[in-house]
Amino acid sequence: MSQTILFTIGSITILGFLAAAILYFIASKFKVYEDPKIEEVENALPSTNCGGCGFPGCHAFAEACVNADDLSDLHCPVGGNETMQKVASLLGMEVEERAPYVAVVRCNGALEFRHKTTAYDGVPNCTIAHSLYGGDTDCQYGCLGFGECVDACNFEAMYMDEKTGLPVVIEDKCTACNACVTACPRDIMELRPKGRKNRRIFVACVSQDKGGAAKKACDVACTGCSKCEAECKYDAIVIENYLSYIDGEKCKLCRKCVPVCPTHAIHEINFPPRKERPEKKERREKPAKKVEVNTATIDNAPAVDVVKMAKKANEESVKKEDSDDKEVS
Image (tube, rainbow, N blue to C red; front, side):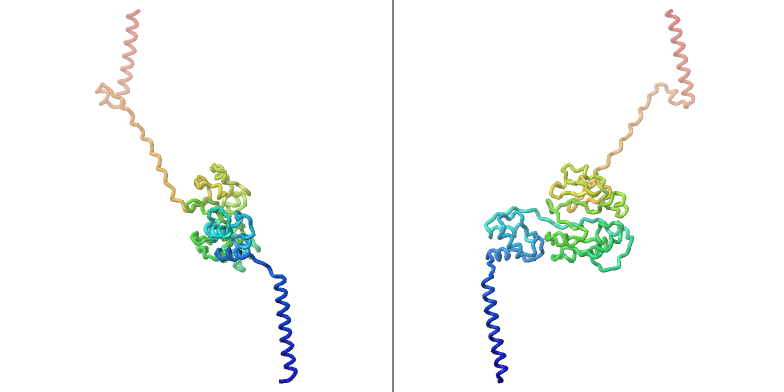
């Protein structure tokens, strides 16, 4: 073996040892200490890294929980209350239970209710289409129908309905991870409380056009008529920018606002069917009392004869009264 090859091998070996020593020194000098509880908390999380908690992933959320003095502002929507109870027990803290949430589609503009006015020839992506134009209908707020929210869901809890052209949420699979809400460029998706017995009431519209323009663009759009607001006794409904909104925290699920909506823009989910009110019975007309006539001749006589007989009887009574007056005088 030549001296050149031996020199080369020796030089590379020495350089490797020097580089390893330098890296070891740097790693030891700048070593970051991590609390072992972070790993314990992370193992208790569902490890979906969906970002529904507001952090980039489960590790960042676990680190925030360990460093926090209070867990009231931290919540894992996928794991829910059960997971947060485990996290609290690991950290020796207490956490209040939160009402479960579910995603809802705040657009009722199915294909049959919104008439297309333009044709889109481009990338089938909601964000791109939204940035290019207002939509293929006169409603510039409604769903574009390209299913970006469905693609963002990691739990297969959504699908696009071919008949309506709108996304549909599968409630049993939805984890309220907020991915669909973030993905929708038109803010149609929203997380709302599941409500008692999994019942919810919300306005399925986001149009901010005036009543006439909104109704012209979509047959089932909210027109901001304020009828629902006037009907609500719990101040759960507000009208802003010609659009009605129902606060899920204040709503008592009384359903009184639903039937007064003229465009059926308010949706009631998982309620039993309404009982039909019985129709009011028509008042029966009382039969006219039959005037009893003692004279058999009048009963059997024709109408003309009866009139004549009545006139004659009247004249005779007048004559009798005059004769009585003369006798008295």
